[in-house]
Image 1 (cartoon, helix red, strand yellow):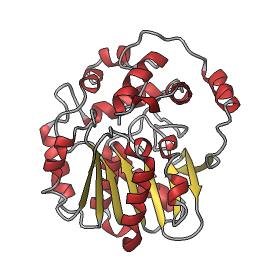
Image 2 (cartoon, helix red, strand yellow):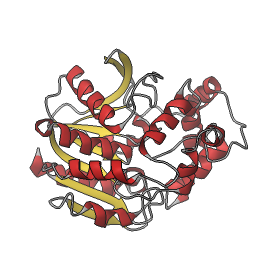
Image 3 (cartoon, helix red, strand yellow):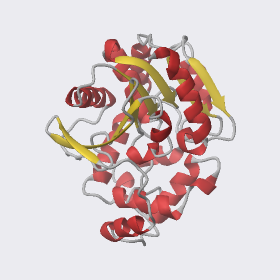
Image 4 (cartoon, helix red, strand yellow):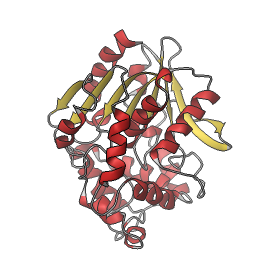
Length: 310
């Protein structure tokens, strides 16, 4: 969900963005799909695409994340589908306009605009955290364009979330705590995983490069504060979101790590009455990012679920 260079500003050492990019290239990280770019609502948007046959699957990442979150997913799904991952507006290498709206409904509108640009009439959506929330908003907003959903820990179901995120919602304090650093990134990413061996220096360097891009921190905080406050996800917007979820009728699979510290598995009982037709997979020994931590199992579950629904 909220994966920026924080919670603490101390330890600001690390390479500058250009040096980091050169270092990452030297590490041989060249097996991903090539970056491609398009214009959506007047903004430049990065995306990946892989696979040429089958139905289209659209991958939606979490807050302050990017297409990189799907590097263990896209090739596997592309064996049976055309798969597209995009950097949402304000994230990754996509534009970060300061005057844009970054609430979840506006992001859903943006996703549909991206689909229009790409000539996509209807897709299955796979989302993690904020991306899963946006996928639900899309399905409620325009059901004809969303064939099915795979939702990994959608944000905004329950009130509670990690204390670090709630602190960052406080004006001025959030600006201080979320200044990008290797130390802060390491802390927050280790909380994202149950198995912290997934948090490598290579991964952190790449995320630091993105976190230091112009306006990245400002847009991150604007997005965060549009969703939650010091008390967590506020009740009134959450209840309105719940009402919209009840309109979603497309086939849905919900995947939730039992050791998720960002959005605890206790949110699942709140979601089940709202999305009663969905299949639920609660995964042990897994945190907030199952598409990385249990990549093979996540891919198998997703492919098996999508097969009869596309």
